[in-house]
Figure 1 (tube, one colour):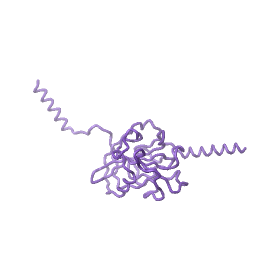
Figure 2: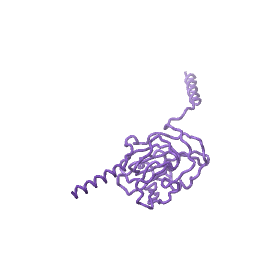
Figure 3: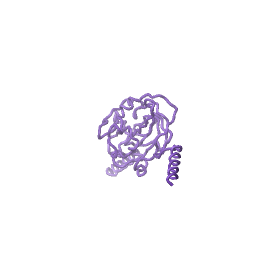
Figure 4: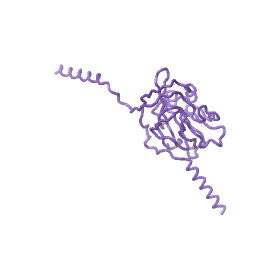
Length: 235
């Protein structure tokens, strides 16, 4: 009996070694490898824009605004690099319309992944599961229904699990890049026609959020209501 049990254990162990199938984990999808990264506003170099607030522990991103504030609301927002849209939702609280794009790139012949994060958008022009090119317009700068002055809140994440649940992860350099530093260090990368397998799946709470709204319609309705009130008051 001991011999039989030992033989069975050996056979199971051998079978496990021979069947080196994929390990359990999140699903994966083929995405193209980025050849470099540009700025998310006034592509490619953000000329005419500046950071009104930069990266620090309690604000692990950058807020971008235009020198000419009069043209900021509705100004184009661009994908910083080729990648896959993994999140387009209207998140409650301080986020508003949000886009997250997953990118793959080579550094010292090793593949790495980042998520670029764009928030407070007036309009979202892409959908989850859509591939985008570097410099492709993906949205417009907004105010999160008037909560803020117009600006783009922009982050680059090393940790692909964060999604919209930023409070669940430490705001440090293990999880985040300083966006400007990352972009400047990776403006031009080795061109590659390769696609690589990247983690793919929904973030925590993702399905609980509604899809993006068009805030430009809200602004139009608000203005129309205000005009109607003025006319009524005048009459």
